[in-house]
Image (cartoon, rainbow, N blue to C red):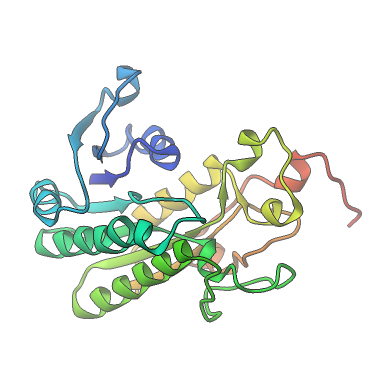
Length: 248
């Protein structure tokens, strides 16, 4: 497959490049391109892309791209509305519209567990729960999901929203996450598996939301749908990796 990744030099992007580059032809894009280890990207086309420019999105995505993995945007849960407006909302709209205008078959994009962060911490949430963002970052991701649902209804393109939890936060914090973040944790290995399976799955519905966390002892998000729909088989448990042991 010819796959284009936006925001490819971020934490999730670099993880996915490593997972996908031997099986697919990757075009990796970012607004800031700084290659410190060229061997990491030796099988990839590298292009500069500012997603706030529709013309740039259109120019980059037109080149025989089968699948777009859209990661670009600000990931800050404390961002103001104006911070998320251009990157997370208008930028996502530009990427989606450019994909529709090309021959793209599938768009897999980073949504977030922040879409439901307004619920109490002791409630486990499925993809069917009404969105309740707790911040403007979450609002921007709800908007992205709404745009994807609309475009999926109007086209034959699959739009897959990945509600990603606390990505790789165990290692970043030296295994000192609080209970809430442990419950929402997803490892790089498990997220790579989800994306790979989303690439390979033939979806019946053109729009799907998939919760993305590891097989944590206590789960903020219900991952039953992911297990059934894409045969997700998570490998990691944040609580066990942090030294917690519970009687079964």
